[in-house]
Amino acid sequence: MATMTVSLPDQMKDWIETQIRKGEYASTSDYVRDLVRRDRARRGKEFTLDELRQLVVDSKASGVGTRSMDDIFAQAEQIASARGLGRE
Image (cartoon, rainbow, N blue to C red; front, side):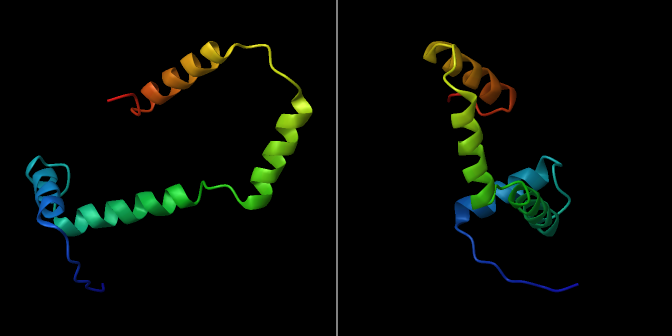
């Protein structure tokens, strides 16, 4: 296994150490490995430029929707809240 040295601001270091004390992670290395795994998974879900273009084409082809902006925003807030991304 390889070793890396990383410099962090004190506030970030304290955050990681708090997560370890809470039992969320076994060590700093465990925390960093989890971050890397999550980043790799997230990046695997990103759209390519061609996929984004196809989404625009499909959206235009579907026509004008009948839902109000209030309904659309309400649904977006529900989705965000379910994902833990609600307003703070």
